[in-house]
Image (tube, rainbow, N blue to C red; front, top):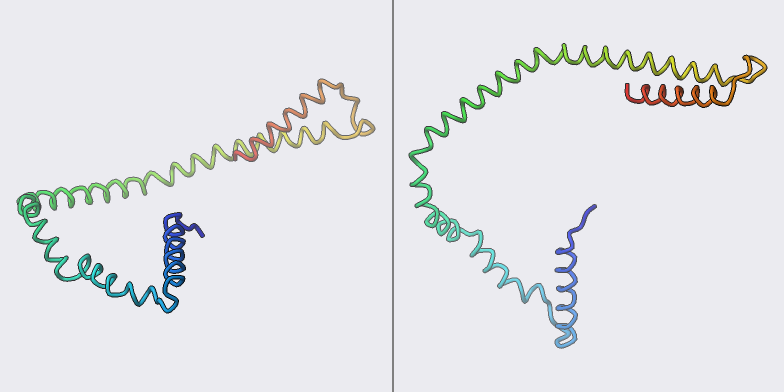
Length: 154
């Protein structure tokens, strides 16, 4: 859970203020003391008068934008229609794209599996296979790593 530093600092400040207040006046109840101030502030910020104040403040802006609303509404509907049409086209194209991607991944899988198997069989003990030189062993190991990479990429 992520805690914002501002909240932690606010809580720390409140604890310090309450502690200092209790040292000066042991019967202090900070929340009961602050409640009227907080209620007044909340009423000023969110109450009905604050709502009317915001409406009065925004009326000039709204009256300026009111004539543009029909055009904006029409353009929004056209945009939504175009998005819907584009999504339908994408739904028709999507299966072909997925099939093509699967075909490419199938080739990567086949090549990667072949290289890994080749590297495994080539690194079998010398008693089973013909003796392999050091350079051939490094090349076979590199092919095995390439095969693993192709398997992971697929």
